Length: 479
Image (cartoon, rainbow, N blue to C red):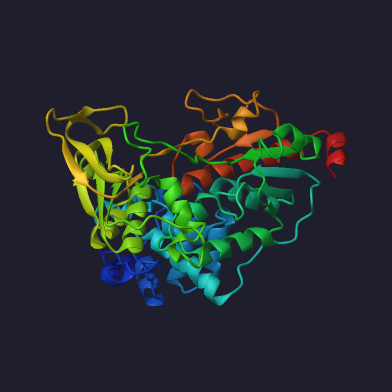
């Protein structure tokens, strides 16, 4: 079929993703999207216009050759499509699930000008899942080792990306992880109904097959310093420790029993098995009414997890309107379908406790939208005298995270920004300390998985150039 006839045949409406029934899925943690069939995937890939100047590639932080992988899906060459994805993306099964494609590659899809954009994220998920089901995930070809040793602090998406890229180039890479399991925020921050543990495990195994070594229960800055890593023979270090320090509301009553940060709440579930208590000895509060404060993806995750744990009322309080919600539209859609109540244009001013120091209500004030602020969104303004109490017995605060200062406090010669993030060269991600690079949330502040991966790719490119230009004597010592 000619390209012209093929494109005329293609339907302008994107192929919807099948989902589990909301009434059933809230009873457990099984993944909500069911995935495309081969027929669905090929029908959706048919909608790609094969643009001469594919803006979708530039819109992807890791520069996947999107037209090529869609063409391979269209032709039924799924393993070729998987190989294309892994050329620049070591975690396609993750990205196909949690990457905000609607703000990146799909946002600039030419088909999206007149019709729905091609469902690039759904197709990435399909290809990665097909590969996992039909064939052992491929690894790099054997390459000559360089003798260079790289230490990576943190096994989140930025660290994993750097590790995969540098291992493919023949470097000896070791990832140091503070927790007892790998994957950072992918493991502790994202619920299984959005990112199944089996998927994360499979992607980690791929990184290991590239030759990357993992060392757990090591806190860089406490267990070992950056200087000590260099003394031990590492030639370069990448810092990808993320933004794991929770921000709180700063209102009275936040220390009451029943108030959680989203980090603590989700870590108890995702990493420590609280959803399977008493099989896992990690208790979590079972509430009759949980209030989640925030409007991002983490707030949606917290609310949807609370619903599954308690099978009870869950409300989400957000100070702006639905139009300004920072969460993905898909996550808002899922939360609403699962019965999460939205209390918009409200802001907490106090958490109220009972005589035993336990949460019994959260006091809020109603808001209205004023002029746009620095973020470009209209600034929420309090309506005087509009306070009201929302009775509840649990509060989860999901209003953002800051960089954990452990590593940076232990490294005084590492230049920081006024926000406590690590200052880097925007072109290379090199820090003020020679041989040390950084990327992800520790540099940008809390952001998305794919942006962390994009920073990791940029850093890996610069690190490779730096390593290959080290003096020969230093190379011999590293070997």
